[in-house]
Length: 332
Image (cartoon, rainbow, N blue to C red; front, side, top):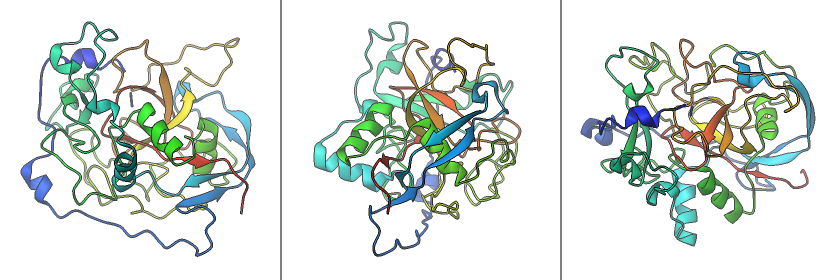
């Protein structure tokens, strides 16, 4: 997720990949298993305290692996959905960042169309010349926002149980505070995704029970997992703690400010540039995102792992980024 993409995107407009056939196709849905009648916090599961080796060694920004302790907390069992975000907007009148004009003082060199409200949208190409040129599949799309995640010709009607996307850190934080909650820390998120597996570097294989990319990225997705693009929440089996879609489907925001690695400032190491498909201003503060998305593949982006991490610019939404919330309260 997230590099220096928007300069390359300044060449012009493009198709978003949401054509009439896509919009008219039958929308899949998945039924979540019922919660226990005595669930303490509806829609959430308890994550017990623990100690684990945080981080991984697949990409430089994931290390060094280090011992981390996490207190117990509650976490949404699914990514926040369109229906849940719509309820928040209806109750508060909140306007998402992708719906507001871009601050031209922050981006004086952007072309005019990129100063329009919008978000970055994935559009599958039929061929690519150089996979180093991310503008072949990532497009800044004016009009893209949570109600129209692929641009103005797209919508979320019938897709209420899909994860909300094209939201920013500010949007996610506003939702969490409305619920009386917060966004997870990177450590909380990673511990929850491990589901009690304390040892790092054990989940490098492409997960079978998750929405990821099968085939040659970005031109061929065989959809062996049942989906091309986003899936509704809860279509795959939960992990051992009862959490759905912790790997794949959409990247998930955390509250942690991104640093280049887990080393303290007194022990720096220069990492390789991660794949950051949503950064237009390197000076803008970035947050850690976790878990990978439906675009992660073995031949390009092996970030469908609990230890993977990427930076995401705070004020830029993308079509493969969502979130879930946590509640720091006593256990059941």
